[in-house]
Length: 85
Image (tube, rainbow, N blue to C red; front, side):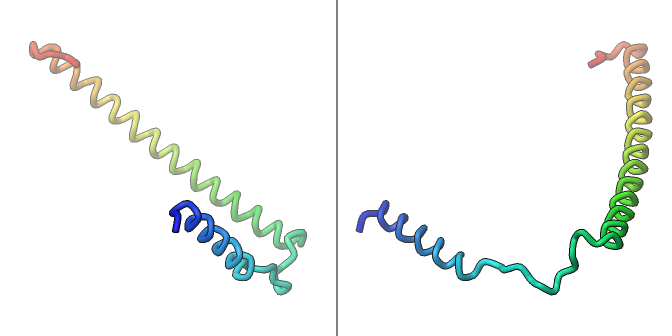
């Protein structure tokens, strides 16, 4: 059997199987337009954004400290007669 036709047959089989196995919508799910759900989601996203901003400020502070340490190290290496990168 030709490898190309085997591949085509496998893809067709996978497509047929995926149509029967594909997940369907559940009628037990909460309506996304519910204001209480939207408020809860908005509060959760706002809290996550606050955590991200806090983490980013900590990262920026640490990077500034590292940059200052590198600057001082280059100054001391330059004064010592070493090669400054």
